[in-house]
Image (cartoon, rainbow, N blue to C red; front, side, top):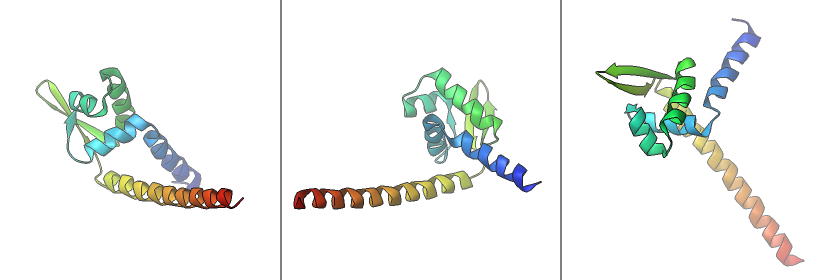
Length: 113
């Protein structure tokens, strides 16, 4: 695989994650398999929205579907996705801490004037 093709593959993977509902779905599925109805309830979203976002995640092989009778259970294909989300959460936390520090500095500067 060429370097540019690999970068494009990586970008497509991250693009598949780039939606609030899809992130929510993955955070929920990191804990255990769920049905569309369970995901709807946990996200407070309607069935078409959840199904549409699951379709995007399935197309990129990030989630898998398993049928049990008339019910479809969804799961994360690779448990490392949960680790990726946890690391992202840590990065965001660090950014917010930095933003809070800047805000406090700005407030101190404003008071001195």
